[in-house]
Amino acid sequence: MGVRRTTASTRIPVRPRRARRRLPMRHPRSRASRCARTASLSSWSSSSSRGDAMLSTPDVVWVRPRRLHRLTRIPPELRMFSAASVGDVTAIDLIGTYTATLAEPADAAIEATRAPYRLNLTARRDVRYPRASYTIAHDDFRPLQIDFMTASGKALKTVMYGAFARVFDRVIPTEVVVRDRVYHDASIVRLSDFRPLSPVDPVMFTPDYLLTLGDDT
Image 1 (cartoon, helix red, strand yellow):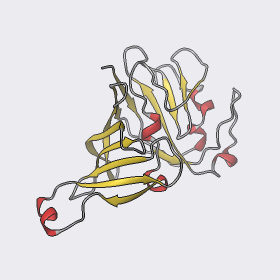
Image 2: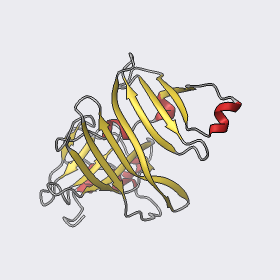
Image 3: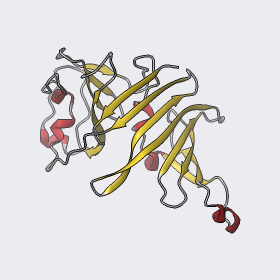
Image 4: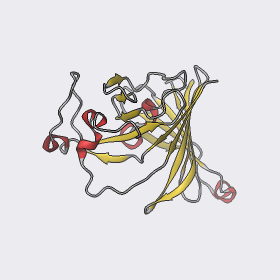
């Protein structure tokens, strides 16, 4: 089973404009602040791609290889480096995409065991993963695991959250393991090097910004 390990900066809600298809791209700051999006700026640490910079949004992944100042547009579901793709599951807006119901009714007996809650997620619209099973901790509601499935219930991908740590004023998972249940591959994403940015410049989360990064990123 191929495994990819990466390090990445924390995910920050920003407002960049939808990317054009032609390069190079220009994203005026005024336009970038109009549309709420979620993006993450990352750098690879695997031996074959160390220093490569990546920008991930819900719709597309941009990669700028080390020492090659050129952008490559990659669909988020594409498997890279013979490992499981991560962009198609880590950028999903669970609240906006799915309706949640408890898998088991909450009663006194179940509450006494303090077992994790399991939610059945059903997509509100036509999406890649129509169903999912979401497991969260009983005491603090931390995310533990999400199993993404077809409409018939066949498991496609599993996302597991771990290495919880306090980052600024919140406790978040700093390690995400994505397992592809079809290709039997896995990827490990580790988040580190958290730095406050005030104010956050939306231009930092556009493809053009990758071209300004040094090779030691």
